[in-house]
Image (cartoon, rainbow, N blue to C red; front, side, top):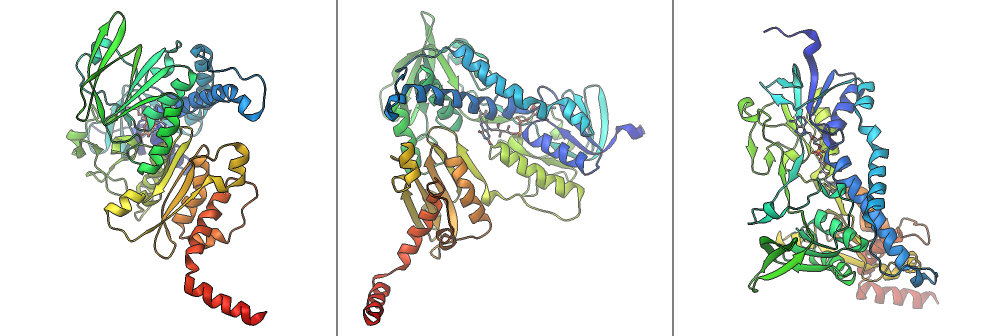
Length: 481
Ligand SMILES: Cc1cc2nc3c(=O)[nH]c(=O)nc-3n(C[C@H](O)[C@H](O)[C@H](O)COP(=O)(O)OP(=O)(O)OC[C@H]3O[C@@H](n4cnc5c(N)ncnc54)[C@H](O)[C@@H]3O)c2cc1C
């Protein structure tokens, strides 16, 4: 069959979420002919059921805490611990989503010159995609179909019913009690938000501590805050059965070596990992290799088929919007121009947006020890940053850098309510080889939280003043008197 000119493209994108939209907009902006298949909602998980609604919910929960805690700042009128009416809170959450949605809309992308096809796309050959009643041919195909919640195979769970990120932002009644399955970023973020809004939250986490990708000290600081706010955290535990009794859900939780316990709750939220959306895409027929984690790609984003690329959650993660966006830019470059660039995994930052936030880039302390990487750790508390003290946000919070013996930044972590924003300077420094001595020599505004970076630099500089250097200096100063 010969194909009409109208059906020939430089680039076809399957999936209009965080990754796919960046490729489509970028390619169209460069003058390439682009088609985008989206089977459900433009904006994908991030806009509709992920980053955006979860951050808006966390913001509302923070407001509830601020109202309760006003007396701490000498302000009258604190509301005391209260159970919030979830309806208006969810109205706020949905209003934020609606505010951002036009940026990802069919209208905007059509205006940018992208042919948007509303339907599921499927590879029918290495260069052909079918969907929404169309069949097109493209020199390059980018698969960006994202992921979905992994629902653990717990007897009785399906019958009892549960929430996931796909349904939790659609409820309007606050569950008086909520059991969260999973202590990763999604579990702790939503767990804290619901606790602050008035639910009694239990987090069941199969790993030894919540946020298992973080160093134990960072995770412990967050866990301490969550527990202080009333969240029950069961580490090293699993939900093994769910039963419905008198309209409530009774979850059997089995811990390591401990006897099973029963926890009765009104609602269950499953946040126990993600599965890549690889089904129904015609990947096998086209010869695209898939593993349990997702579509296999090399560092350039290319799959086992040279004309097919994969980005974002479907390529096995790391599962972040900004990683999907970064991969999108790299794939765009590699598909449309000569030469090959690689994705920069080494300098990927991430943040868990709880209060306090945990922000991280590069090598962790635990990882450095396990891998035997020569390193030194510089850890400074926010107690020494005056702005944090003025804000009443210093206790238990810290920043640390895992550095090479000569002060090169190999990794960094910050635990603080504004950690995600504060990390940016350290990410830039790490990526472009700016070391701790240069951070020490950089002027930071007083009193700003950013002084934490200078404090890290100073901590390194202090170690350069050995006792013998100091005694030599003392002799020089004595001679100069
Ligand atoms: C609750 C929650 C909170 C999160 N918070 C953050 C955060 O704060 N920061 C962060 O960086 N990340 C966060 N994430 C992760 C982030 O949402 C994902 O990493 C990101 O959305 C992945 O982008 P993607 O392009 O791979 O997939 P998506 O953005 O999900 O897009 C995939 C798109 O493909 C479409 N699709 C699927 N199959 C087909 C098909 N066959 N044909 C056509 N279209 C198809 C889907 O409908 C969807 O629109 C969060 C995730 C969750 C669940």
